[in-house]
Amino acid sequence: MMLRFSQPRAGERGIDMRKRWPAGSRCRQHGSQRICVVGSKREGTEMASETSDPSPRSYPPSVSFVRRAGPIVVAPGIADTFAQIEKWLLEEASAERQMIDLLAKLIRQMKAAGSSVDRLTLHIGTLHPQLVGFAWVWNADDGFCDEVRVADAAVDSDAYRLNPLQRIVETGETIRREPTEPSSQAEFPIMIELAAAGMTDYVAIPLSGLDTRNVITIATKEAGGFAEAEIDSLARLFKLFALHVQRHSELKISENALGAYLGYGAAAKVLEGAIKRGAGDSIRAVIWVSDLRNFTKMSDVLAPADMLVLLNAYFEAMASAVAAHGGEILKFIGDGMLAVFPETVGVAEASRAAVSEAREAIARLEASNRTIRVASDAEDRTSLRAGIVLHEGEVFFGNIGAPDRLDFTVIGAAVNEACRVEALTKTIGRDLLLTEAVARHLSHDVEHLGKHQLRGVSARMSVYGMAG
Image (cartoon, rainbow, N blue to C red):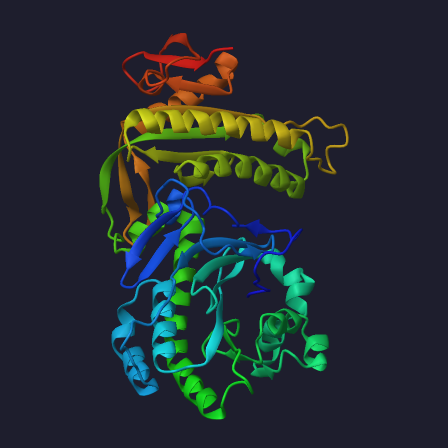
């Protein structure tokens, strides 16, 4: 679902890209388009220095910028026809892997065919624990096409309830309005914004398919609005384009669902075909093992619903810290969590990132303790504390299990050792313990806590904690 998309105005809240691309942006050339991406490493992006944003836009708080393509321009001497675009949609377009690339090519060909479209948005629903959908926003004024994520909170806002999209989702009808008409502006406040931008005609069209939330909107500055012949031609194009939208939507849902349950790195491998038992790779990684202190005691005294509230707060603190620096969450086991930091940029960097995020997770738990309260703990006896262990070594990252019931996880001696060290967090009384394999990559702030015999491990292992 999409809400409204505008150039920034003074005092408007939201993501403001006035001066710079967001930190972590990465740009690539795709044909005649320049694709700039911002996001975490789990989304497949890389960190890069900030670059100036040539066309700043502002979005509501429930909408977050993902990436940008463009400017979309028509090369001199290029002239397509709507028939040629239909042929492209039936043939070559299926090779496009990213929706932003597909849409950019469609828009460029539409303009080459003489279309009067000056603004186009595409909205698709999705299945995601936190998102209602994705959208793409193109404007002829700057030529750029932005991809954005839309959070669940968007559907509860007035901007959505008073938007043509909400009616289309409910009724499936096509909506056409003149933005300059007072009746249109009273019905849909977004028309005021479109009229101010010079738009004379607006059409919102449901895209046929399994998801009624898939919608495309077009607007023009042409005097008198869209010609009926162009509307007919575009309607034919969009019926074909809807098939591609459905394909991309289903792929995105698969990525989201698998990512939510397997972790995004494991999900990517599964979608690439790593589904055979035993399929996987041996990698070196920093291993994170953690559990919730006093879980058994809290389960005895708290109502199940309240225990679930605390567990979710605990896992949110742990998981958000791990994901912030490229960690891969593999498994929640009761009150425990297993994650890895693959050594893609070296063991020292992975070790420092893991330690930094472990300390951040502990700080987040402390912050949660100051705010979270549950009804069955009237005396406020519960406190969220974690025991976290960081170890480094070689692991097998892949599929294990029964022939028809697999799990994508990590196994190996290093994982076993990390789990054994975790038990020491209680006996030593430290929330964070490191093995020598991690501690030796930290320049300071660590102290040796002795060598310990671990159950099932032949050699005694040196354990370290954070100094101070």
